Length: 250
Ligand SMILES: *[C@@H]1O[C@H](CO)[C@@H](O)[C@H](O)[C@H]1NC(C)=O
Ligand SMILES: *[C@@H]1O[C@H](CO)[C@@H](O)[C@H](O)[C@H]1NC(C)=O
Ligand SMILES: *[C@@H]1O[C@H](CO)[C@@H](O)[C@H](O)[C@H]1NC(C)=O
Ligand SMILES: *[C@@H]1O[C@H](CO)[C@@H](O)[C@H](O)[C@H]1NC(C)=O
Image 1 (cartoon, rainbow, N blue to C red):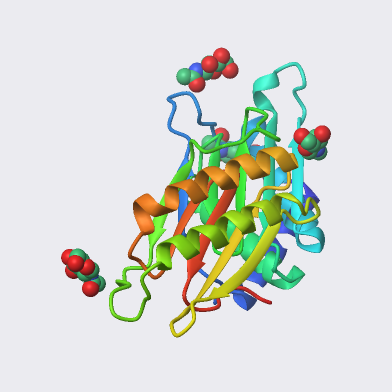
Image 2 (cartoon, rainbow, N blue to C red):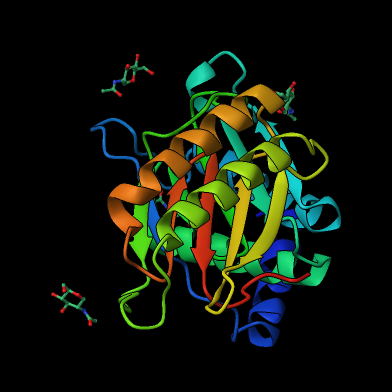
């Protein structure tokens, strides 16, 4: 067992105690294809462990890392693992770190031998695969959430349309900010509520692909969220969310 591994485990264990109050994951997907698993003590396992170490150390300062670990058997391309972690644009380095730790520990438990997995939390997502996926728009891995409360009563007519305009604007704004690919904003419906919205893209994308990804998800909001006071569409490359309360750091 190499020293870096021990160090990481110790670090993870000590950090878990501090951050045990971190938000729970929203969703995870483990690879499902029959040969998309690795065995114990394999090169892939070692590479994945090293990948997690890099994501853990390198993501919090900037909010994003992608990494490629080739390990000892370069002759066998199957052993290479590719991964990235992306924190939400309003995360501080310590929020980001807490989120990455939760992502790593949970994915390790829930997808223990998967060559490919993705896990989403409020403040970050983490993805790895034996296939290089950087820069490709992933909307195959996707889910929706709605805020179960109905809009009726406290919400003005026109709410859904105003929400769509806000979200379309935020999608454009996020795509225009490649340093974070993040935008958050709000709109007040006079005499009624405020709508708060957020758009985040993975920083491995181009601005054009960020726009394409976010526009696609915003376009799905009406189908799932009309008449609701909150909703999200989350994919492997971008996510969109709205609520009638502030849920991001200004
Ligand atoms: C299984 O692995 C082989 C070799 O890496 C690859 O060519 C093939 O596409 C994989 N099959 C599936 C179902 O993932
Ligand atoms: C993995 O490697 C360790 C240390 O080399 C060994 O003790 C253990 O039996 C191995 N496990 C498997 C399943 O091969
Ligand atoms: C990260 O992704 C970029 C863009 O796809 C790529 O050029 C770069 O090689 C990747 N870095 C690593 C360490 O994999
Ligand atoms: C929301 O409205 C729908 C349709 O009117 C109703 O079936 C559902 O029970 C309501 N849900 C809540 C949480 O009030």
